Image (cartoon, rainbow, N blue to C red; front, side):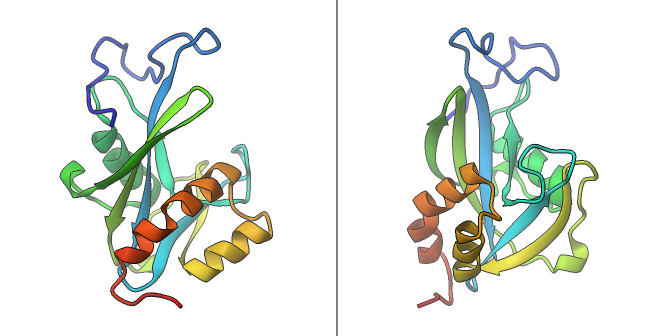
Length: 166
C-alpha cells in the first residue's frame, strides 16, 4: 500500500519519477458499493480518454497525500460523496505500466439525485448490479482498466454485500 506522503514533489505533481524513465505514478481507485448488490459507476466525459465508458472513482496521488487521502479527495471531486480516508477499506495494490494503484472499497448508499458530477470528468452516474457490470464489460462499455480491476475484486466486493446476487 502506498501510504507514504509524496512530500518531496511540487504541489500538483503526480509522478515520483520522470515518466518514460522508470518513474511510477502512485494512484488510487475505489469501488463504492451499497451493501445491497450494487456498485456506483460514473461515465467518462467526452473530453477524456475512454470517453463514454463507465468507471469507478480514482486518480493520482498528489504531493503530500497518501493513497487513502487521494481516493477520499477523488471521490468527493467526482461524485460529491464525502468520506474520511480511514473509511476506505484496502483491497490490494496493483501495477499497470507505470501506475501503482492502491485499490479500495467504500460502503455508501447515496441516492443518484445526490451525486454531484465533475464537468469535464464525468457526465453520468448509475448504480449497477454485478450482472449489469458484467454486461457493460461484455459490450465494451466499461473502461478496460476498470473492467480488469472489477474482475480482480468481484469476489471481495460480493462478500461485502448484505444481499448477494446469484
